[in-house]
Image (cartoon, rainbow, N blue to C red):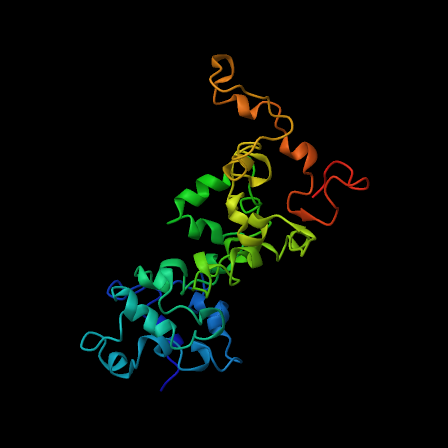
Length: 288
């Protein structure tokens, strides 16, 4: 098989109106821009550049070179998502791509080229500073959440979607890079892992019971403000600081009376868990 890269560009550089244009490495270059990416590293025997150039993905072009109008290589532009992905996964398999088959994106007919700009030197999906705009093309609800006052620094460029998610699929939920929500969070928030003498069950079960990791209007990405968040679970008993009510009393029948005086975090300062014995002389302010 001939090395077709330069031969193809003689027509596909924009000079031939009948040939689809392939981006070039520069305004005065006849080299394809893809050769400036990892696909163009000839020293790496896995790349298209080391395996016949354009033909590595588009198939044998020998007949097309003899008579361009009579024979055409495989056109991936108008191919189905499955056909496009079959070409890509011929090389990109294992590792981060191990769970692609059956993943959320694969099941919804998303093609690799829907996110990746294959023929460009710079692939926005692979750059953490630009990958968010690729993800937001579909995940507009997450863009909105990340614009809320309390959010992870994704828009600031300090982290990217791929720090938590593997878009190619995973063994866990929501395409998370770890097997569970908590294991993903613990990569950065290791101090919340425990084990503690006094564990807070929601913390050991699922961080998103209390937090929305993409952003909220409440500090610390909490879903609701305390005490309302705490009362999602802790609502069945009276509590110090709660105003007493009398059965049948109209003056204390408001549904809001039970929230007066409740400042959970005034006492429970280590809400993720702690090692102090509650209510002991050395525990300070009922620390958990």
